[in-house]
Length: 97
Length: 280
Image (cartoon, rainbow over all chains, first blue to last red):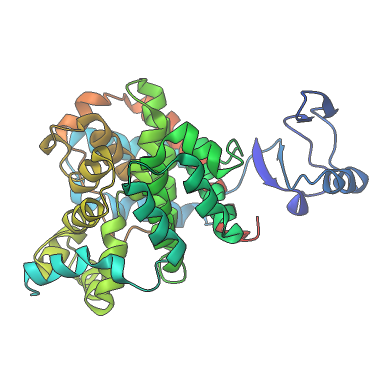
C-alpha cells in the first residue's frame, strides 16, 4: 500500500483504503479505480492524498542501495548484532525489487 | 581547534540569530511564563498562518505518520503539552531556516522521529509522542553548529568523510565538542523538557543518562536504523554500533529487524514525498 498525492496517481491504480467523510460515511469504496472522474471528485472534496495498492520501487537501483549499505556498515563489521542488522536490511532490500 | 567556551557561548546565544522568526521567539518567551495560558500561545502561533500550517504539517508527519490528526495549534497544545509544542516550534523553525542546505538532515531527523515513535509503540514502554519529539530534535546541535560556524561545520563533515572518521570525532577535533553536547547546551538554554535535553546529549551513549534512559535508547536505536537505511543524510557516512544498553531495551531478532526495515521503507517514501511536494 502506498500513500501518494492524487496528482501522481497512475492510470489503473486502485484505492487501498476507502475515502471516508468526517462523519464516518464511506464516500468512495476501497478497490475503486482512481480514474479521471474519481480524481476530479477527490479534488472537489479537497482531498490531495490517497492510499493506493501496490509496492513502491525505491528511487535508486538495487546495486547502489546494496553498495550504500555495505559502505555504511564498514565500521561495525564483526559485531554479531550489527552484522545481523545488516543481513536483515539486505534481506529486506532483496524483497523490494 | 576552536575554544570550547567560545563554541558554547555562541551555541547558547543562538536565540540572538535574527533568522529565528520573531513570532517563535515571542512564543518561546511567553511559554516560559507559567501564567501564560495555552490559548494565548495558540493565538500567538496562529497570528502567522504560514508558520502555523508548516508546524501542523511537521507535527502530523513526525508524530502520526503523516495522518492529519492535529488540525489546530490549540489542539496540539492540549494533546502534547505546552513544553513539547514549544520544543517543536523551536526545532521546526531552526530546520526551516536551514532548509536549503540541510534537506538531508531534515529528512534524517523526520525519519528518526517516525522510527522512534514506531519503536516506542512496539515496546509499549512510554509515550510514543515523546519519542517522536526526541527523535525529531536529536541532531539539533548539527543545525546550531552549522548556523553559528558554517565553514567549520562543513569542514567537520568533509573531514569525517575524507578521513573515514565518525562525525562526532571530527566535530570534537574542530569544536572541542560533539553536536550532541552543542545540541544539549542549546536545548538547555531554551529550557526544553528534560527528556529532550537528555536524549539530545546522550543519543550516542544512552547508558549515560539517568533521567531519560528509555527515550535516549529509543532515539539511539532509531538513529542507527535510519542511518543504516540511508533515509536522508545525517552528515555521518558510517553507522556506529548500537550501544549494549539499547540492545537490552530492544532485543530484536534478525527477523524482527527485517520487519522494522520494511516499515522504515514505507516511511522513507513518505518522507521523500513530503519534501518533494512543499505545497502539501
